[in-house]
Length: 328
Image (cartoon, rainbow, N blue to C red):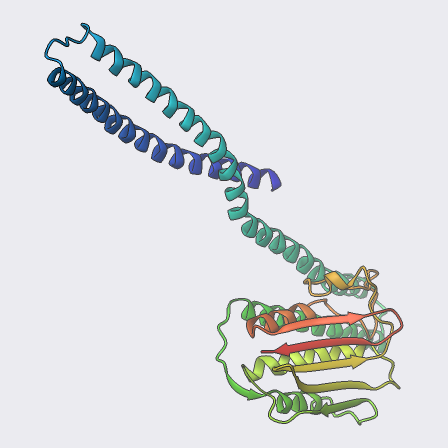
């Protein structure tokens, strides 16, 4: 696919250059004709002026034609050099312009390819598990009711995983192209409601509102989903006995929300990639309570971008992880 974009770049460069050369040649022809007419007129005026001064002056035969021819050659050479310079400089500029034009398309295509590849992997795994379990059970003629129940429970778990993945993909797709209805909302109230969904004691989740009237222009449902994602991550990746703190305040004219949790933290090499779709710091992708799809933070970042808010996460291994959202 890289070769395809290289070929497209060269074709686009050729089109840019062809348009530039056409414009350059048109202007060259215009400049040539205007200049030659001006030269002929000036030479005629000059000869007439000399004859008026000295009636005995007779210009050499063919002198005017020679001067016009020499001027034509000089002008042609100058315009030729100018067009060659336009060709070289325009070619370089056209190539970089074509690359810049195609870079977002190439980046989007690469992202879609990775997305499709990762999504197919995530969908294939639970389907393969269900298929193998069903095939083994069908071959077992002496399967017991308890084994069948265990099989159904296992398949139901995989179906739930597929359902959750599909719903997350749909939400991500919806936010990818949606235009949200924005209005002034109270960020503190949205944060409180998002925290109440978990129904956890303050020893586990504490909502700390440090400023009044934390208003921002936003979409309440999307912001609530953003806070839910960040709170879920903080609770999932922190010890059960630790406390997650959600802090909201006004700082330097912006509404700032911080969600702080203790836990294993995030490695430095993983931090630049945490907002990428399907990216997980847990490369082994083993099952467990902390297993996810790697879509939550990507969705959170998309929601923040739609609100022109800044979402950042700072973390160090075995120290606090802080997710910060700043609304203008």
